[in-house]
Amino acid sequence: MSLISEDSVRGENIFKDISADADDFQATEIESMCMNCHDNGVTRLLLTKIPFFKEIIISSFSCPHCHWMNTEIQSAGAIQDQGVCYTLRVKTKKDLDREVVKADCATTRIPELDFEIPPFTQKGALSTVEGLLDRAVAGLEQDQPVRRATDPQVADKIDEFIQKLCKLKAVESEFTVVIEDPSGNSFVENPVAPQKDESLTVSRFNRTVQQDVSLGLRADDDLEEEAPANSIDAMRNEVLVFNTNCPECNSPASTNMKLVQIPHFKEVVIMATNCDSCSHRTNEVKSGGATEDQGTKITLRITDNSDMSRDVLKSETCGVLIPELEFELGMAVVSGKFTTLEGLLTDIKDVIVTRNPFVSGDSTTSDRMERLNEFAEKIDKIIAGEMVVHFILDDPAGNSYLQNIYAPDPDPEMTIEKYTRTFEQNEELGLNDMKTEGYETEN
Image (cartoon, rainbow, N blue to C red; front, top):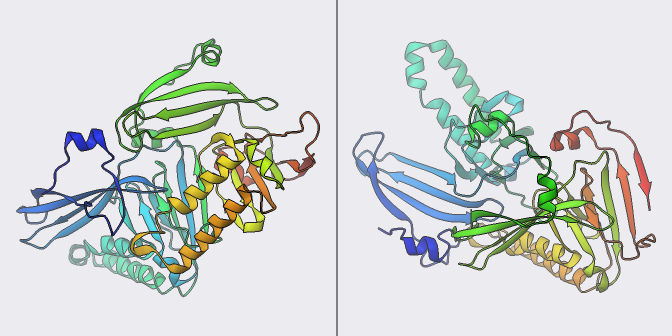
């Protein structure tokens, strides 16, 4: 039985990458009581991390006396700033094999059957779409013997519904699976990465007060206190420091926050975390102003390596498109940051290729590896100025920026479009009273 020591917590990251080659990748075994026969069994805990989902704890219980088993996962990472909603259109049987991470606070819905699994009624799971269906069927079948004895009519209706769920696995017709997680810690695999998944829609949303309460982020009677009138002025002239934990090794660290005015643009909040234990560094940018009346679409034609030195502000609501690569990056994949164009392209390559959880281990396929390696080579060519492409920042909140090196004159290689948001974009931003038609272009 392996134990988690204080040295391992403070010295190195106890959350290891999933890998079939790791020799020291051992589970922690704990003797615990079986909830079925009340004798003693064994719980195995595995602390690992999945990029795009951060750290997780996988626990598996088995009882040698009654042979009862139970497996679940729990998120070990921080609750995200926004919730996430995955909407998957299941069209073929291959879609049933998609990897899914479902947090215990997530709601699962199948609109075609008017079926919903409420939050906190199931433990978190690392599974597939088919596994979610099997788990739903097993949950409904669990109390069927008692229902058949006490209420046969209800039992018959549930049997009929179970048959409908089982038929979904044949994919005789398309159906929709929706996973809505206010913690932002659920995940559905995109098997065609780095290309856009036409069957999968990912949206972010602001939590309600009730959702914050259910996640333990605020008390039932928590009241928001109004900030002093001069607090913003004070923040502009100083760096604020907050105590936190390193997202990599969980050691005590500090986060620095500063309001910065970007020339020819607006004010932003830059947050940086440095860890003295593992030297891990992160930086994130939040918009310091309100959501603009219109969205902004910035298109740059990259023709030379000198374009890589342009300053870029990518907000947390901004998507990235490179049409020549048939590549589209959703707003939530790379966090908001203030960097250079080369830095942003390097981050995109790192997220899509280097830290992709499905390019190593048992889930790797040669076709997927070849496709991702080809994408990485093209990104390197763009950075080196050997490939002419269009780089597009599409921000429905209007809070992103790309430096005009010819300012105050117009940039001949860059265009800026102002557009009115669609209803769906307003939904993602929590703005449902905006108009949805019309485009206006400016150079």
